[in-house]
Length: 204
Image (cartoon, rainbow, N blue to C red; front, side):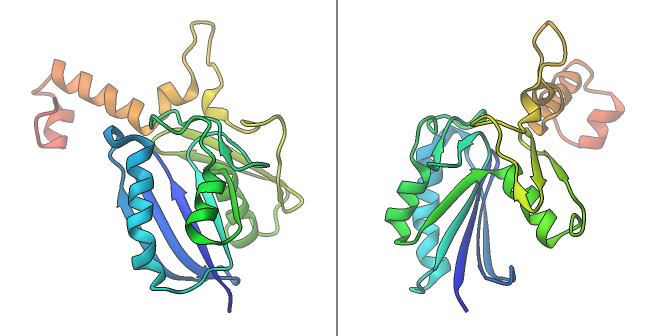
């Protein structure tokens, strides 16, 4: 059967999976992302990992879920809100040259929504709306079995909705990194608190 490559590029992790047309995963690799390395560091990780994952096998196509707004028509990244160096990058073109296979790139929440709608808990439901809570906060909408693409590039990016007139967004309050910052501030102010004891180590 045809082998397909899936890549997830996030703010804290990078995942590459090899699967077939029935959505069965054959091999996978999960790597941690160093934000200080920026987009260049992530691209180097992909270049180093691909030969180990593919073992010389040809792939029919590549699908990418990117942690930020993407122009799905061109595969060009609009920007990353967590990792510097992605803005304007031709992600699909770069991966096409790297793999020799056609590439489709979209926002990670969009492709996650499509996966749940066609292979997961959303099967038989219409529409399906998916929310990601990770390094950032995102959303994806699937209608009639297809990703809903409205205004490019952030049609369902609920994480960047403003909560009030002062300007905070849903992501700035609820994302993993936002919660981590709140915990660090609290523990630094109250090192003897129950939360500090639950963490079990000093937080700098």
